[in-house]
Amino acid sequence: MKEELDSILKEAQEVKNNIKSLQDLENFRIKFLGKKGLLKNILDKIVNLPLEERKELGNYFNFVKEEVEKIYKELREKLEVGRFIKFDLHHPGRKISKGHLHIITQSINKIINIFSKIGFDVELGREIVTEYENFDSLNIPPNHPARDMWSTLWIKSQKEKLLLRTHTSAHQVEILKKKNPPLKVIIPGKVYRHEATDARHEMQFHQLEGLAVGEGCNIQELKGIFSIFFEEYFGKKLEVIFRSSYFPFTEPSVEVDIECVLCKGRGCEVCKNSGYLEVAGAGMIHTFVLKEAGIDTNKYYGYAFGLGVERIIMLKYNIPDIRLFHSSDLRFIKQF
Ligand SMILES: [Zn+2]
Image 1 (tube, rainbow, N blue to C red):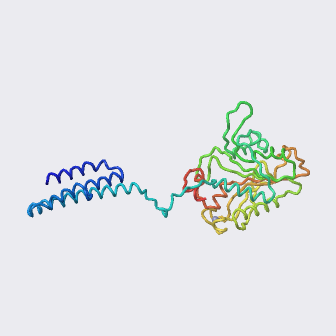
Image 2 (cartoon, protein in one colour):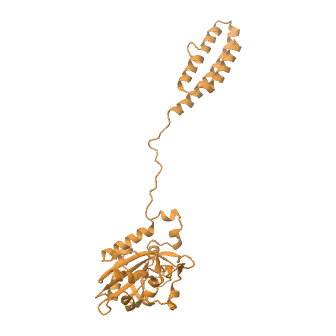
Image 3 (cartoon, rainbow, N blue to C red):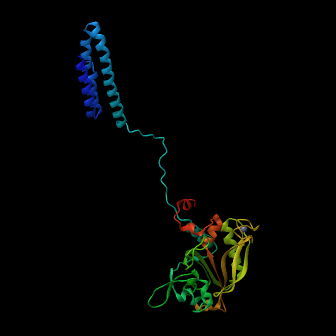
């Protein structure tokens, strides 16, 4: 009878691997552990044995029964986990991150919005321009020393000399010709310089050109435009000062400074303790440029300015390095 018990255990261990469903498992239970199963069958025989043999075989029977039950339990646990794929409806799902506009695009949109409110239209120009558009039309003839102010990326071309615009001023004459005064226009766009990069300089950056021509345009109005713009952009009233400067296409020319947004004029590392930050170049449009566009210089005056877009974004958000904008570092981009 011991051999019979051994063969039952052996069989249970062998069929274990063939059990793939709960129905298979139920068949297993009926066959080995059921009321008319193999083990019950043997137990009935053991009960009728003489006491000594009954004791000995009884212990062995219990051992085999426990082993078979263990197999049954293991199989049931395995099959039930497979049947009920456990969904935890309260577990937080994986966050799907949505893309958004780059901080430069967001800021240009904001800048355009502010200038639109004070009457400026938006114009766009090509990034590849002619030597005439970038220089000659702006009172910068060949061999003029001022050409050194813009480190130019030239493009190999057959007929006229082409280049990647070094400033958005390259569109001044083209737009003045296209639109009749009075006019107020801004021209945002990428510009290029052949320069080594560092925390303050990039080979490619954004400028915003402003251009206004009318009978009453004057430098006072220009200053007013800056006051309104910077107050709107930085969200607080800031002192604007003009410092005398030189550009071939404006006369007089000024550098535009604002009260340091970080130290409120008290002096800090960013403003080099001056309390002021340089944010734009500007001036009254030179008569050479107006004449080049066919505008009557006895009747009309104009002012122009060029804003460094990255520069004012860096000041607003206290960004220490211009190269971060195009670094593809998501930790930087996701902040905005
Ligand atoms: Zn400061």
